[in-house]
Amino acid sequence: MRAFLETSRLTLRPFAESDADDLLALDNDPEVMRYLNGGRPTTHEEVLRDTMPALLRHYPCLDGRPGVEGRGYWAAQDRGSGVFLGWFEFRPLRADSRDQVELGYRLGRRAWGHGLATEGSRALIRLGFTELGVLRVRAHTMTVNERSRRVMEKAGLRYVRTFFEEWPDAIDGSEFGDVEYAVTRQQWLEGRRGAD
Image 1 (cartoon, rainbow, N blue to C red):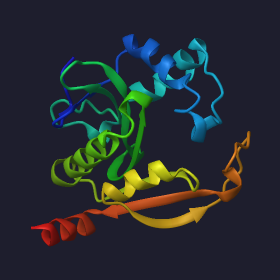
Image 2 (cartoon, rainbow, N blue to C red; image 1 turned 60 degrees about the horizontal axis):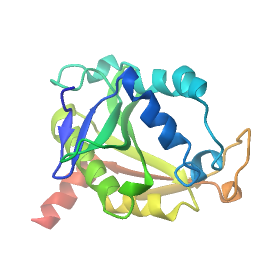
Image 3 (cartoon, rainbow, N blue to C red; image 1 turned 60 degrees about the vertical axis):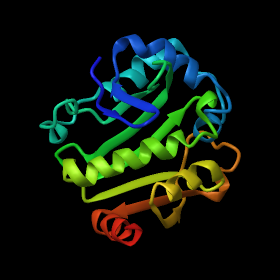
Image 4 (spheres, rainbow, N blue to C red; image 1 turned 90 degrees about the vertical axis):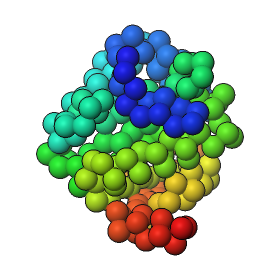
């Protein structure tokens, strides 16, 4: 399948139905899912019924760039070996506008601690601001998820707020709420000028 985006160590490509087994393995690692559902197992039926349709959803506002195909989620592979590592999200907040997008990532443990989440996030942000017409990128995580917060900061996003939502099933740490981070195109450009 054609790559959407490549970095020095990652290939991001559109999802396919054949990725269901890799997604099932990813979503059944309790450490990967710790800050998402408390580490509860996911069934194959849930992956097919809930996860795959979300990952395959078409966003017409993202059509136009070759390889984008209106997708908002991308399978992440090791660029050298082709091994499935997880996924990245770069999804419009509104289906009819790419002005604001949600950045997200879910990588398997073998990818942790190597800067891959930061590498993929930076590449998506750069692409969004330079080629896709994105004006603002936001991301969120649980307040207690320090690793994810560090990735957001290293990718250039800034803390915006802490917020609290009602969740059907509370998990450890949810009492501290969630945090939002964001960066605008203008802030990103100013940061790039400062780095030159």
